[in-house]
Amino acid sequence: MARQPFNTRWAQGVETEDNLNSFKAPGDVRLGTGWEGGQDKDAPPAGQENWWHNRVDSALQDLERRGAMAYHSQAIYSAGAPCYTPEDGMFYESIANNNAGNTPATSPTYWRLIGASLYSSFTVGEYKDVAHNGSPDSGWLKCNGALLLRSAYPKLFAKISTDYNTGGELSTQFRLPDWRGMFPRMLDDGRGVDTGRTLGNAPQASQNLEHGHSASTASAGAHSHTTTFNLDRSVTTPGNAMYGDEDFYGTQTLQTNTAGAHTHNVSIGSNGGTEARPVNLTQVRWIRYL
Image 1 (tube, rainbow, N blue to C red):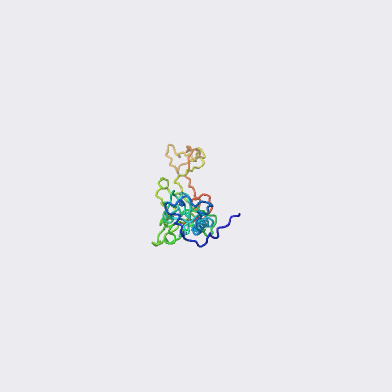
Image 2 (cartoon, rainbow, N blue to C red; image 1 turned 90 degrees about the horizontal axis):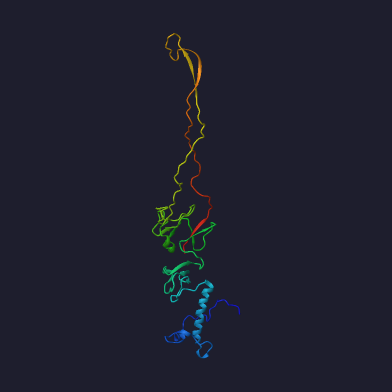
């Protein structure tokens, strides 16, 4: 027989235990063993059987429609077990063994919020990078620095608080991270590489590591210069010739001493743009708020 869908529960409309307590009373052997299978003498009353089938089918409907059963305060959950909470429409994962009586939405030490989808696998405040600029999926917002009301996004505000405020926000508001045009850098968190940084929307300015440059020109090697002067003579003998008014005959060219190899000062021009950056591609960043 092919499996039938659980579109309708057994004994539709049975919502109470009827006289179920009659076989749940302390000391009743059926509390631990159930009814004797196939024995008319111990068949359960119709009201009890209908209630039981209704209860089972309700659980199977949860599994078929949502993938997880609705939370029950008396159920005992193991670590990793999921549940659905009708109050807020969210899915949660138990993070503790023997987890019972702890309401998921208000017990973060026992439950992790999964989100509106059982298999979303993202927690509130996580980032996701996408390759398009369309509208974010349900439960996500663009990281564009927008102002939000704290009352409208309480789970996200509980995670990031006012860390990304830039000034001018009201006491009822907080701001999203603004990742537009930015590169990520992990928080130093005590390592000592990038000290003094905190989470927030104030970007770290672009810079290069301080360094120096050296430059030189090609040396022409040792060289010398020449000079030409008059060969003078006195007009009378003896006489004192004065440079500029003496008689002279002919000229002579002599070589000066060499100056040796030497260098010259050089001015280096600059190039580049308005920032330091690696080769890159663009993408869009979202943040989870549910």
